[in-house]
Length: 117
Image (cartoon, rainbow, N blue to C red; front, side, top):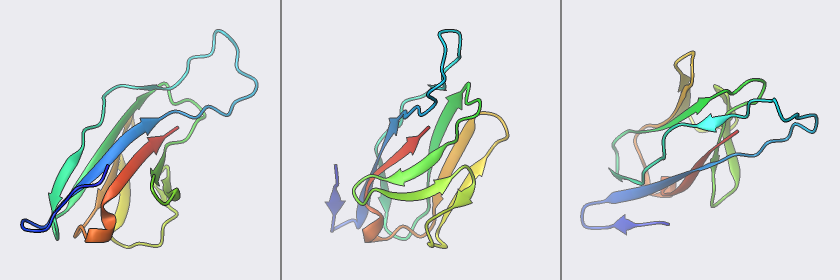
């Protein structure tokens, strides 16, 4: 979902959660990653900064990735940036919270973002 208010230069950045489990050796006793909080749509004024928060419990050996849905571009895995965009960064609180930061939001930043495991 994309929304652009040209009068106020506000961008809606849509974020969703997706779990992709790729462990072929799972058992019934294995604890799976669990997203703890739903993510909301955010509307940001152009030029401002925004952060998306993804909270995952029981991450285990899995990794957190941030993806821009419309282009299917992988932005980051863990805190390693894949996208060559200096305005993007990821932080981790050392426990279960990951944040994707977008500084100086631009028109081409609008769109859907996903936190994936």
